Image (cartoon, rainbow, N blue to C red; front, side, top):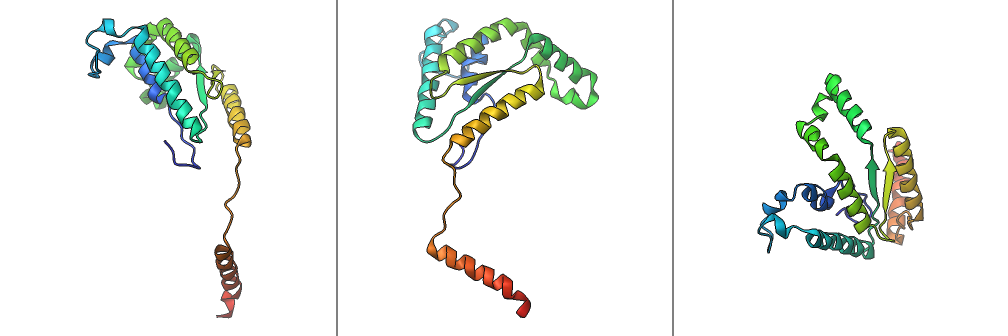
Length: 183
């Protein structure tokens, strides 16, 4: 977690445990989790517990002064295809494309279902999700920046106050700077 007074950005982070692993549950078998011995052990109850853990973790963070903003930048399947084609057709963007991205498109509908379940199961009053239509990058960035700005404005932000000793040091520094040409 970022230290107090800092902003941190997580790109999916612990949500991977209820997204990719829900589409590909065999990943979980490699984690050596207790009581998980086969794919049949990875059922709805298993994921409900993970959702509960995420809600509890975020509630804990909120109680301890962290502000959590969760954005789901939703693009359409057509827009994803257009962006992938641009990465292929533009040599400077080739590095952005992974063959696994194309393979995962075959699971598009499954991912949509999994995202919907995760969002619904982990959105709370204090830690809601913001689902942002993102086919238009400029517009989605505008929406996210508006939400961030409004949330930052609600924080009790203030510049640090100075102790009397610090004020004396500041006045001394000011005097030294003003008098430096005299030496």
